[in-house]
Image 1 (cartoon, helix red, strand yellow):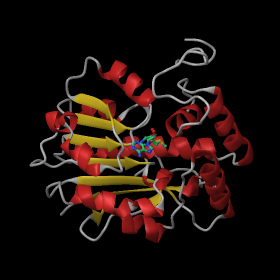
Image 2 (cartoon, protein in one colour; image 1 turned 180 degrees about the vertical axis):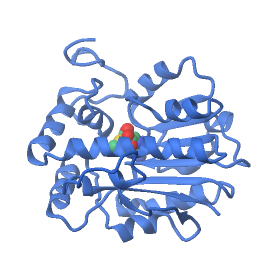
Image 3 (cartoon, helix red, strand yellow; image 1 turned 30 degrees about the vertical axis):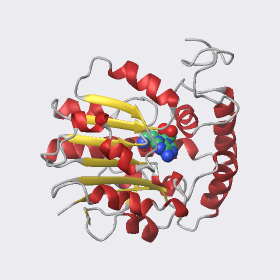
Length: 274
Ligand SMILES: C[S@@+](CC[C@H](N)C(=O)[O-])C[C@H]1O[C@@H](n2cnc3c(N)ncnc32)[C@H](O)[C@@H]1O
């Protein structure tokens, strides 16, 4: 590993990677303290940290609620299949590690469009026959659903957990994130789950500032109100207690201290298909 991080020297070309543009996956990796990022990603993340000092807390709260939701599904439901859309770079406690810790037979499909995620995911999963990662655009739900990689592990006659963690806010309104959720809802059986975590606007000026910065740098980033986020679940899914709440308040292991205004800007909910 070099000073530049696990990706190595900034001069070495990686197929499909444009080092002149920040990537969502690598910028988020840096916010979480990871090493799989380039100077351009660190510069963007540092701008976030400087102008919007809660950025790191948002990233960590998001990972925390994701871990708790996966544990909840693995421990308290019979679901043993997970599709993680926009899975991100491997970090601590990835979905398959949490699920398989509690239910070793759990199968996990990771999907991301970032080639760096694919490279690192493959290395991490080389020995894990119940887990796979492949590169695809999650906006093309049909190709993800029909992919042989998905079909090799997931039986759509059995309940599935669809994981949409910190990804739907990277879809703009004209990309119709509600239609994406509906696509999966229509293909999973009763007893399946959908998890969503999402940037939450609460009409706070800081969310508007973050949105402007993300849109300018990455071309995407949409903070939504609670009603807008809940609408993404559609009519058929039942949102489970405690409903859509700030990520840190979703079934916490220990009651959190009073949340900072930043921590209120990321919300999460888990829903079941009755
Ligand atoms: C903020 S990260 C979230 C990672 C992880 N789900 C988590 O909650 O920690 C968003 C991820 O979605 C991926 N992503 C963004 N747009 C995508 C798309 N259209 N198709 C597939 N992956 C996408 C990015 O590469 C990145 O890894």
